[in-house]
Image 1 (spheres, rainbow, N blue to C red):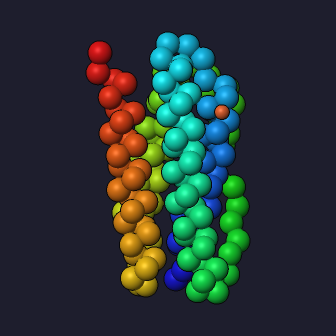
Image 2 (cartoon, helix red, strand yellow):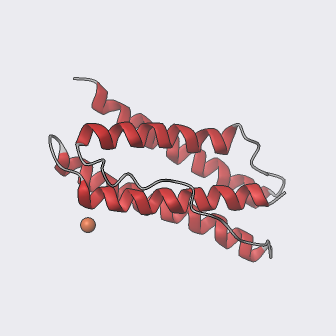
Length: 132
Ligand SMILES: [Fe+2]
């Protein structure tokens, strides 16, 4: 059952890499604050992925994953980047909450809960760009 946690960890790692790319490519209105937030989001995502992969290592789970996020290298305007971030955050939150990530182990459950909470806070923050 641990495969679901590994899939989540892989998704978070993919998302982190794309986020770092967007940190470098974003241009336009509000590009500077978004550029900085993208780096903070990258750090959080890498940390979440690391906690899950470390948990898998500690529990001797098999680890393999495929990259599943397409890199939106063509997304460079702040509006496009924010739209991508909101939809991806919503998707990953759904994975953590609704697709039945295995939370059978207490330590793993705590990590998954932290990830869901952190991602929800990020989604709230990016939604603030919508309000004029
Ligand atoms: Fe940088």
